Image (cartoon, rainbow, N blue to C red):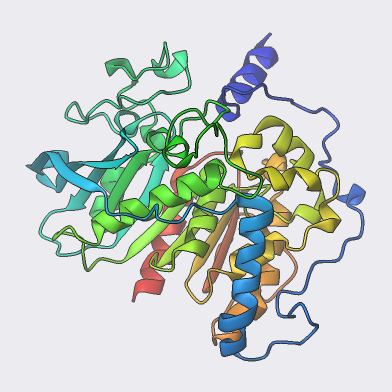
Length: 425
């Protein structure tokens, strides 16, 4: 009985409103991984080998970026990067026992008679000018990340989670602070960092369709979903990250700050893609991002393209469907996504018992991205062997494998903060 309850909670934590197929025959056996060959990140389509940053920047990087847009995440419509209307909804200079400034900002996007509101919850350390700021989405509303009665409840549609006090797809006072273990805000503030968070459903709710959120703003007549190579939810969330950054770069408290993009699970996939698209993010962190995140597709370990596309087709462009059970036909693999972030620092975090996310595949992606970082004179991962448990690497490409399961822990945040501090010195 205890096992059944635990299994149900696991499914609830990782599923969305789509049906979830917990495939029992997924591969978690390393011996069952078949031989594979990765596309060479430093070879042009014509076979030319790259040994200069200029060739990478002007030829190979654009090639790879375009392939990701066309085949996996989808093109973002042109003209969508208009400035958003911003308004400060609430501000306090004595938050968190008088150690922080709290600011809540409404960003409104208007088009075709429609209106989309994104609520940014921002905490900054007091008496620190332009502190570095972590930017990350939360899964159940800003009110869940901290027990602070002043935080505004989201009005957006939310996946029901009675354990968090969320019913009828709406936020409630009961949900306040229910996910604070994932967001050690007092620790972040005490270390001299700020935090900007947004409920990811403000940009695109997880309703397994494209009926709301940002997508309908750009439909043409009689269109009700993106075309084959147009953006899915991951690209929409990436677009949202850039709009949040637009605001923070104009706010007098943060306009000269450094910005650290952070994401967990499906948002860990998003952080890598957003970091590749928008080079204004100074550092990128991806936690337990797995398939279509940091893990190599071609290993077919844990979650595969067939599984992720069956459960979450709306995350991707329609073209991605043709690679179900045909990973070897992809013109890219995820070491190339990490390489697109070079030369900026990037950190990949894995969990020992997170088979679904393929920790070894996450590490190998970072390892195989290293040659691009070396072009810039940066240090990546020099050993193809995964490091021991809880022994982090903090090179320009950073990595750790921690004890435990899929999630965000105190240990993770300790490493993120140490990594960022080292690379902002």
